[in-house]
Length: 161
Image (cartoon, rainbow, N blue to C red):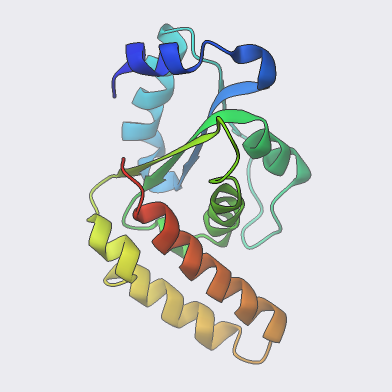
């Protein structure tokens, strides 16, 4: 990641609460994501980081939604297990809603997973969605969420990273 390019992109801080929001699964926390946060911090880039213990399967918090809306750059770190987290998928759906916001940028990062696996929801992504569809098959509202998550994966994975 070219931090100098990001810094020049972030020169208009007054419009944003955070320079960067990173959506990631815990399987990248102690390697790639920790290094990413460290590099951003060393370059003076203000990144939102939610280090609280998240309730498994819970609803995304209003604070996280506000952090997404209030961040200039939204980075999505797609990993092998990203789709196995409903929390990550809720963040992703919100991020996908922000793609058309002027001056807000969404950057996908593919960590140990191919862009086509994310776009096509194959491999681990296919397994995760098969489980969601089985789990939520009798809940129309949640099935709509699953469809929204699928669309958000395709939309964000199609962006240039």
